[in-house]
Picture 1: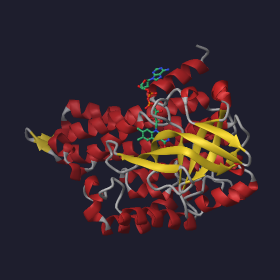
Picture 2 (picture 1 turned 90 degrees about the vertical axis):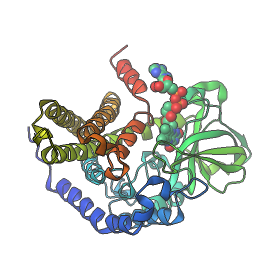
Picture 3 (picture 1 turned 180 degrees about the vertical axis):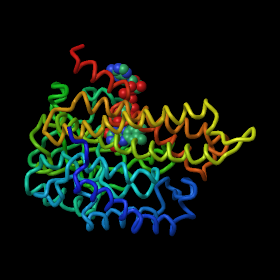
Picture 4 (picture 1 turned 180 degrees about the horizontal axis):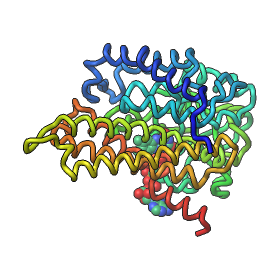
Length: 395
Ligand SMILES: Cc1cc2nc3c(=O)[nH]c(=O)nc-3n(C[C@H](O)[C@H](O)[C@H](O)COP(=O)(O)OP(=O)(O)OC[C@H]3O[C@@H](n4cnc5c(N)ncnc54)[C@H](O)[C@@H]3O)c2cc1C
């Protein structure tokens, strides 16, 4: 069995790393006074300052022009059609800088996703093409105040009236919701039919009856999420994606994809934690010798290396399976739960090895720790992943 990475994959990884150096690092330097502490990056309304939002948009556009941002999408819609393995390695590379502006290099939930491949060519021209070019951004609106894990309990409805649908309901924790140009909204067209009654609609942010709610500040303090409220919100019937009742399959298709992407993010961040632990433990002295000579700290470093080795190979194998067209329901859940929990352990150990220094904001490790904690909830909590795995095993 040959585990060597193809040259093309290595070139993509190196290309993305060079892009981050050339386009992201100067933006970070320019905005250092806002980025030194997340709270300085926020405007009074809880959203990111306009300067930071503009920087994110600029990185996204330049990355799209360079061919990185939408590289995971098929060539037929303007992407580069690169493999899942290459996309994973690109994420791993990008995340080595920690969670920040660098993440705008690659598309996540705000950009082109598998859901858009289920659109008609006309819909793709209107909604997908500007996403692929990095000119606009979107948001995925599934969760509601009364229903997160239990998608069947969603209460937002979409009622057909002539050539329009009328949407009523509230969505919560919408990532990129504060900045999105248009939304992917999941609503029940047949409330009595449970999951089979769920449909998906594209709702422009300025659609009549659509209102951006309060910004929700997560532990990242990054103005990243908000509520969206729909009160008699009217959209043309042509904004429905797929058929009525396709909503659950469309949502799950996207979430399955994102779970693997999160695996890549976690491995990149954990690599950074490990490197920082080794460096610090080699230099910092206590009781007359480097702390890295202490068995307890060596165990923390070794356990992180073991975790990382397992996670990297797990994600690589799942990506390879996706590239072969294999079903990965069980594997993508395993990736999500293992990688997010692996990163949580890695970030926790990295802080411990750094002692008090590890808790200081300027060191950057506590930010990775908070991000690791956050990642265990969205795109299906750890419990939901374990439940999915148990069900896949016949329980
Ligand atoms: C930072 C962030 C970003 C997000 N971005 C988006 C987004 O862009 N779009 C979007 O639609 N949503 C988004 N979400 C919502 C996210 O997907 C939900 O928070 C998540 O699915 C959990 O739903 P919940 O919060 O309602 O928790 P609940 O479903 O109420 O769960 C509460 C607890 O019960 C557990 N639980 C529930 N059911 C079971 C079960 N059957 N077995 C065992 N345990 C169970 C859960 O694991 C959890 O521990 C985001 C959330 C966060 C925090």
